[in-house]
Image (cartoon, rainbow over all chains, first blue to last red; front, side, top):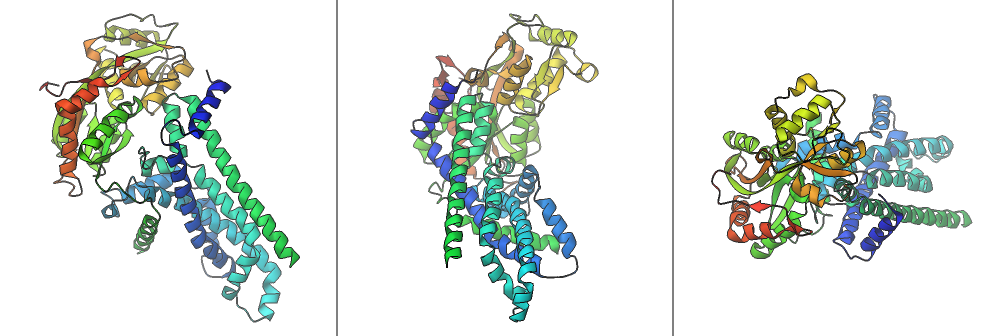
Length: 236
Length: 278
């Protein structure tokens, strides 16, 4: 039923651009995922660090909730964004349901808790080393945030990659809020779901191989860069 | 208060993303809520480019089951619905969500099942008898179970066959709540029977051990209709461009494109916009 040969020929069809708009599908996937993860990083890294260093009432429950949200079911996140962005929902006036922006929003919601939670843990651990030093320098907790984020940057690359993994592998949320519209909101994962349902298993599998390969390249690149960075920083 | 803050934050996030989105070259577009059968069969791949070439209007299709597609339109999230369950469509009209229903085309449903045919219904011409036999023998049957057009037709066929599904259902009757393609995949893997629209079946690439066992009964008729979503309910509905799409579908030109769509020489959909009873 599912022969290696048919997967390879489907793979060749994708790579040679011989059939349809696979390149635009790949580009859209990257665009949606990278945008969502970058923005989640811009918000999540400082937020996580602040949560690590500040002390206020209700901090512990918030940490528990955010840790729980790391396991937020994508299909629920999708449903929430769907109901909000629907024309009948509170943000319906924006007209953003079934757009790439809606997919980015859903993925942002999924990725943010992961980045906040992991950053909080990393920074809190680092603070236990730095506390005396920073205090003796007269730098407050909030003032230490940039230093701590910078010094934890190599661990935080892994944090960002965890977020990226969540976003790039996800199909439940973006299927609901994007609608899997051909040439507009169809991504790698929604294509795989569609081709599976059409019974074209070799093509679905080949798309899966492409997706995993791209993810592997991004991870390799990020790891390489952070290794080189660590070496340079260590050499100084 | 908290809800307000959350909504504002979410709105801000979403709007921030609009800066990153792909530049929307196609400003003139309509959203059509349609069924998995029209998409999975490949019809839209020939139909939509022809319409866009003629009018410059891009059509974005969200393919769902008929029930879900109508619900999408009920929330104002589509401009046009293009579905196949007449009773549900008429309810949609009666509720005031649609403007007018246009018959567009038809094909037929078929009963597919394993080649070995444990129910012994292959070659039958009366679908009611076939359904009665399947229920009596309790052979595995996969139901869409998703309020789609095909699911609606299937439930009606049990009724016509005099089968009280609530009373006899058991392990043999498996509702999976998924699209037609996924249902065929499941039926194939389980050696079960199922009801399919012919278009999805012909385009389906993983037939495996499944074959058509019953076809050609009038009760298996499958009519598709299109409706503009009522702009009086939702001012955001693109009434002019949406109606242009429907007008084109039922025009001689649109009907000819539908008739011309074939897979391996077999015509999938038969235009019948001129039939007032359809």
